[in-house]
Amino acid sequence: MTDLYTRFVSGALFPLQEKLKKHDTVRVHRGMEASQWWPRQRILDLQFERLQALLQDVAVHVPYYRELFARIDFDPAAVRSVADLQALPFLTKAEIRAHSDALRADDAKDLARFNTGGSSGEPLIFFIGTERVTHDVAAKWRATRWWDVDIGDREIVVWGSPIELGTQDRVRLVRDTLMRTELLPAFEMSDAKVDGFIARIRERRPKMLFGYPSAISHIALRAERRGVRLDDLGVKVVFCTSERLYDHQRETIRRLLGCPVANGYGGRDAGFIAHECPSGNMHITSEDIVVEIIDGAGKVLPPGQSGEIVVTHLATRDYPFIRYRTGDIGTLGEEACPCGRGLLILKDIQGRSTDFVVAQDGTVMHGLALIYVLRDIPGVARFKIVQESLDLTRVWVESNAEFDSSISRETITAGLKARLGQTVEVDVQMVEMLPAEKSGKHRYVSSKIVGR
Image (cartoon, rainbow, N blue to C red):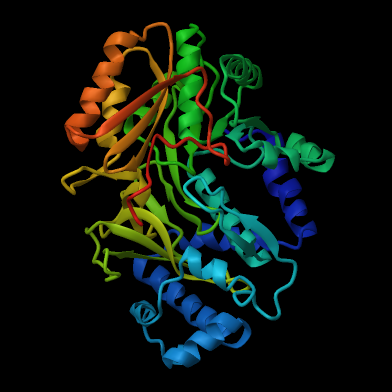
């Protein structure tokens, strides 16, 4: 049951904050709360209306699209279905880097500069307008309430890097205190730091946790090794995002915190794309997001077939993301969800294309094939695998007292060779503490040859 303070925050304090920031979040959220229950076709009709409006707007105000539409003779007024988007080329990170200024609407105001962490390459710098922020916050708010928690409930956020944490000023800390949310920095995960996190979580007794699945599962496992319970605190849900949520992480978090795990898919660039409901399906924010699935040749695939996720965000008229290639792999679902929501479903989100590796014989496989080798070795606390080339794969291992170096190194080498090829060089290095990426995330596997 929602307590009085949570009602005050979600019903008064948070709306006041959004109003002062000139964000229309409350109205957008109210609309989303209603539209999620519409029949699917009615939602798709709304999506199409918003797509028409976006295309006609950017044709007038965004130099990049004004020039593009003229060059390919594309008339946004003639668009009759979402499928007509296929007449437009994809927007890639390289295109954004090359045309950053031209992608800005000529009447855009108060754009905020953002960038991706660049964990797999060069960071992407882009801009976000008020409308985009408003819609993304409203979508996240709606998904939060699916799990019987709300803005104002006690929350622990396991997130961030030193750069992000350094931007927190006194005003933000006061705001977080009023909102009852607290940030734990995921960048450094030493035993001493994690023990402090565990103590703070027990003291705080949050209703929800939000953050990287790798960090939250690592905290939970450390608590288990120390004999510290986390399943007696009243945590109602753990929201995981920004990394792929693996089945073993979900089970670890569920078991040790005694609550369900809700996956979220999206990013700073593409927006909040999909959220998991209590029935277990990932619902696309269909009022705001058009998702296409494409094959390696760029052909749009029907529901049920796996391919790269391409996103058009309908609330980005100030700095448009139209047919943006995410580099992630997934599948659209056709089925209706037992929860009754008409929102489209995104299935089998398999992570970035660079989470795949290539064997010497050309076989492409998901990084899970390598992850399972290390995950089952006693004493392996954390690890990172980087495929440098077809002939060289490096492995960094952070271990604990159960690790038998003489046996385990051989097991790792033999297991990876069995999957990648017997002549592949496997370089295993032991480290005291595995560093996170610049963003604070952790990637188990990355390949420098996939997606080139």
